[in-house]
Image 1 (spheres, rainbow, N blue to C red):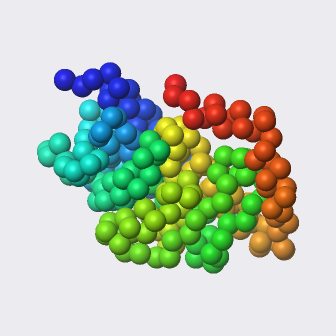
Image 2: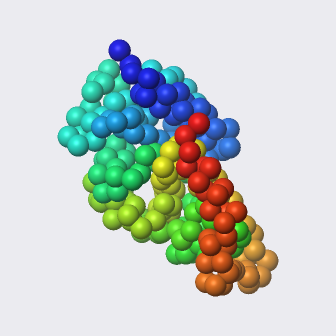
Length: 222
């Protein structure tokens, strides 16, 4: 029998999986997302397009042991990346891994995403870069885990984006903001030299009470 917390997480995963597809942040069976439910993480199954996953199809995995509790369908091939991230930073409650076009394009031509506008500064902050590592391997899982203590958004070279949050809503909106940031930066760079926010301007935005309040709203569960 599914308890109320687990059922709520299943429904939220289904909702945000469909949002991800609707926004074009993945294509086909690409990408994977997860969220905690007590000592479990609920993870997308392997081989499924995100929009096709029903609430009862999210795979249960014990975070501490790594034991997969549902065996009819395999968990996402990136199961280790999710597990290692949760173990490394227990404050993380949700992980969104997508393949956004502008994010991938950015990693092909640059090794940084400068601070460009207020939403990026307030909701995301600095973004980490991970050099290309073979997907689905423990090497990628280790590389991501090494970043999740200091960054909530990680760009994977030639691969995609990983965002984390205190809930799925926060992790999802970070995905949207990073993709928009990459889009703006590439467009500006093609036209000339982008004007980026200074460190002082970045910190000033982060210190605004109005922005802190907005971030807190994103962190609250529905």
